[in-house]
Length: 537
Image (cartoon, rainbow, N blue to C red):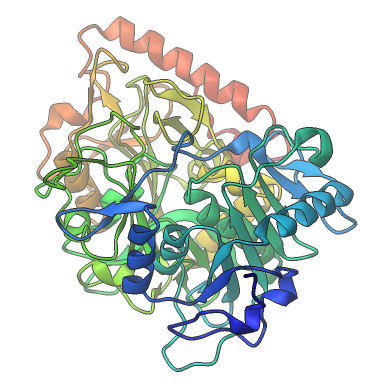
């Protein structure tokens, strides 16, 4: 028998006074409001959405899509977004009429289903926090939202959401009716403050939709939204780590000697840095206790594991297996990281690190950037996409340039975010570093991935100020300042060219990569002469 939302089951914080009828969702079988972790785990297991591992984490599969679907993401084009969104392959427009048709069909889909509702926040700074609501078809998606977003304080009344995410993986778009590219779509409507996700079970679409929302809203308030992780030392010194998935943001910011502020999304306001999220979404392919102890210890009851291989009899996890995907993920709340900063806010950063996984083995393992070079490399956003983080990638990394180290999530022009970075750097005097977590001694397939322990040692030395006054020499092509020595790192690992078997082969690869940089930067013809001069020769 179909029931009205006022009769639905609830637990935790209970149903909001701003109920499902506000969203047009009616005639559902049951609605579960703000269930806690244990309740959601029980529901997910009972509904056969996932299985518990031997350590109590919930292991789920995301079906055919084990990564984001960037070609299926749209923003509704209206009178406000028409002139403020940077339209193109990343920010694809969809009409208001198409959105309304898709939305109406999704509302019809909910009828007769059970739904899960989670009210939470995005943004740890109370001045910039955004109340959000997730309405999901699956219990484990609601658990994911509970672990990744910021939870309301116990006892506080339920809030009115300013943005709502409707997530129905079993509902499919009709390209002929809805103006989409496939049956899968992620559609953001800033006027109606709605996000529709359908045709995919990949939970990362939720968190990146929320990130896109903040990237659109905050620049108008003078806040620099950043695709970066952040941590803080014992002396209160904050460090930021920019980079796309697979470059090491989560791994390198989870440092036992420093306290984690957040692993992926932050804002930089006039007061300092604040996390957008309440949890972490760590890659866990080849995870080991020795290399990444903080992430390893976070895999426990309440953690959601996406596409991690597990022995069905013993329920033991196999983090080394890529039989499903390279993009295996763990979603857990920040308080699962020992010593995490809660609430997750910090002061102005002293060091800003750009992480890149250079598939060509050209860029030095660490180099110091001038402010102009920092702006150049921020706009360039060079890295290599790692297999599995997006649909359609093969097993080998693919070189790419992603403006601001996060172009897929930036609705406004890249210059908007670059100008905010420049303003923050000038005002607060942070030092920028370029760190290659990719290949040394040759390109992918010939060289080897930079050893994590050496990368950590270089970062620790940079953040501690130990590299500031050491001798350095400019790279012959990229002209960044490369330290000639670093505590805890053999000197040969600092010499990108010297690591190659043949110097002339390195020179050719460096020349080819510099041409890629210059070709990519042609679209930024509006930058100052100082930034343009920071290009490789």
